[in-house]
Amino acid sequence: MNGQRSAARRPALAGGRMRARSWPIVVVALSLAGVAACSPHRDRASIEVDRPVALADAPVHLRVGGLAGGEEVTISAQATDAGGKVWRSQAQFTADGGGVVDLDRDRPTSGTYQGIDGMGLFWSMNPPDGDPEQALYVPASAASYTVDLTVAAGGRQLATRTLTRRRRRDGVTVRALRMDTDQVAGLLALPPAGSPPRVAVLAVGGSDGGAGLAALAGMLASHGHPTLALAYFHYPGRPGQFRDIPLEYFATAARRLAAESGLRQGRVAALGYSRGTEAAMLLGADFPELVDGVVVYAPTSRAGPGLPDGAAWTRAGRPVAAGSPIPVERLDGPILLLAGGDDKLWTSALYAREITDRLDAHRFGHSHRALVYPQAGHGLGTFPFVAAGTILVHPISGQLLALGGTRPADAAARRDGWPKVLAFLARL
Image 1 (tube, rainbow, N blue to C red):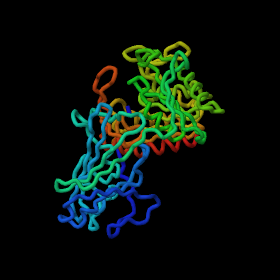
Image 2: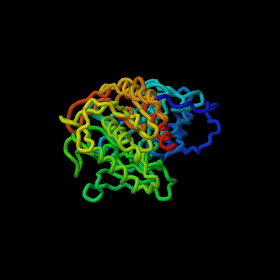
Image 3: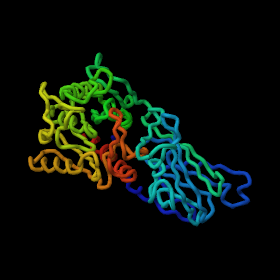
Image 4: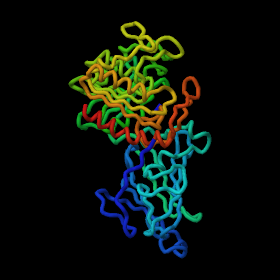
């Protein structure tokens, strides 16, 4: 269970030409026979992009040139998901006097997103059928996917461009850990050989079970962080139900991750999402010698019940009582909390403030920060620019869960929060 601030404005355009930039521009032009007679600019229509191949969490700058001044055009994007369905987005623009549309500068007159947003075409893609609010774009490949861009006007296609969005960098290795051979289960993603050493991340998902943060693991490994997307139930070798999960299992996973990553200090960062925030914070509180810092998305401040019943967690064989406060004051490292003010699953923003207030009261010796996005919901994480809805069809129960927020607000929260998460981890 994973709002979009407008992209920073780029330098102004003058006379249809861009001011000098520090990055290269790749120009792809498509000349159309017979179009030149309609407009003196049409034979030079082009899509310019600074990074045609980039990590999926990286913004790109898109600019369309060679248009007629004041010309109305439609820019669309499409990508194929794991089921073979083609997701699409589009926005209509009016070119400036120099025949240019700059997505980091210009506001669409209509389309699948509103407002100035250079990456709006990416997160606002809709599936061809069904309710986009209940959909999540999942590409066919775990490594990369392509986004096809098209510029059209008056029923004619003026230019096309295909971008590659990489979900993991070259050299990142991913392998499954198994209970019978590794004592833990999940997917381990390691950075390319020779990468500078960075803190390893134990990533714990929520009540959807399985190795739910596998995509996050590949992305974090691409940024240099060895990451284990840990499975603690509903996964081969693990219990089928979310109840009576020993906290010692997470400690074993932290030790295993440290060993696999070659960390000399043996301490990792714990990252939790939704119900996984309980495990991440309880691990840090009960085994502070193993945890260097904690990141939690849509947190709670108290231990929750098991599903469908019983206790969710055990400590030394005894159940952790549902409703008992998570003793975050015992953490031995900083904590970063990200929450949506319109979270409809639970009041994660209030829980985040409760946690920081409690840390202040205990004169907590490490940094602690809560990032609250007022209009975002439970789906405010993790990395940005992926199309996602605000209603979850729970993969185990089949229940429809309203996560709150809006697609634009969640997209903005991901765009703003993700760099702060990376900076937090880089400091550990």
